[in-house]
Image (cartoon, rainbow, N blue to C red; front, side, top):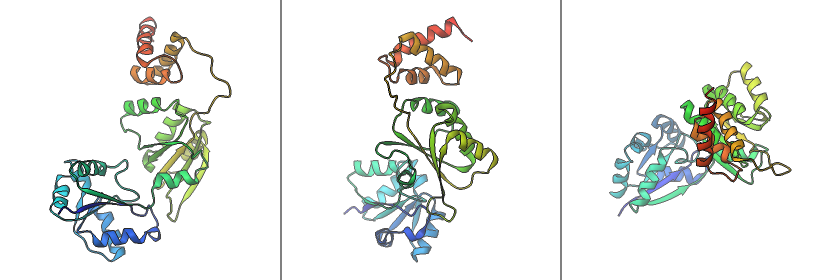
Amino acid sequence: MAGTLYIVATPIGNLDDMPPRVAATFGAADFVAAEDTRVTMRLLNYLGLKKPMVSYYEHALQKGEGILRRIEAGESCALCSDAGMPCVSDPGEVIVRDALARGIKVVPVPAASACVTALAVSGQDTSRWVFEGFLPVNRKQKKERLAELLGEKRTVIFYEAPHKLRTTLDDLANAFGPERSITLCRELTKLHEEIWKTTLGEAQTHYAASEPRGEYVLVMAGAPVSAEPEAELTLEQAAQRALELTGQGFGPTAAAKAAAQGTPYSKSEIYKVLLTLQQRDPE
C-alpha cells in the first residue's frame, strides 16, 4: 500500500510553539522532505530525531517525482518548510497537487502561519484579506502586479526580505500613496519581534535611516471606500488614467487593466483608446 504525504507546519520562530502532533509526525515518518535540509536538521536535533532527508525544493522543480515514488512504494513522508505552513507561496504546492492527482493520501498537520499571525495583530481589517506573498523581482512584473491591486479594497499581505524592504516600501508608496496604512511585523515570535502600525510614508522615512533586519510580513490596508460613489468616467477619461499610469512605468496592458477597475469599461476598450492617446501625444 502507498504511504502518506504529511504537510507539516513548523514554528515560525519560537520552538516552544511546537505542537505535540508536529513532533509526533516527524517521529513516525519514514523520511522528511525539507525546503532546506540544514534548517530542518536543526529542528530534528532539537526534537532528538534522526531521519533521512531530501530537499523538496530541488525535487519540486522536477515535479517531485522521486518523493512521490517513494510514497507510492509505501513510505510516509513529512514535508516541511523552513518555518510555518509549507506549500503556501512555496514549491511544495506542486508536490501536493501531483500527489492528489496520483491518489496519494495527503494529511495536513497545521500550526502557525506567518501571514495569519501577522494579520491577527496588525490592527488592520481582518474580515476580508488577500495574500500576495513575495512580489515579483522583475521590475516590469512588479509594477503590473501593483497596478492590479490599485482598486483592491481588501487588506493585502506581503512577505519581504530585509535587503529588499526599502525598495518595496518605495514601490508601495508610489503605487498607493504615502498615507496608506500599513503594519510591519518583523521577526514574529522571535526575541526581537516588532509590530509597528504606521503609514507607508512614515515607514519609508524610518527605514531610510535605519537598517532593516529580520524577515517582514507587511499588512497593508485596502483602498479606502469612498463615502460617495465616484461620478462615472467617460471612456476617454478612463483611458487618460491609463495614460498617466504608463507615465509611471506601467505597461499599456497593466495600465488599462488598472484603469478599468470601478468603471463600466473593459480592459480592451480602454486599451484601444489608450493607444490612440499615445499616438496623439507620444511624450
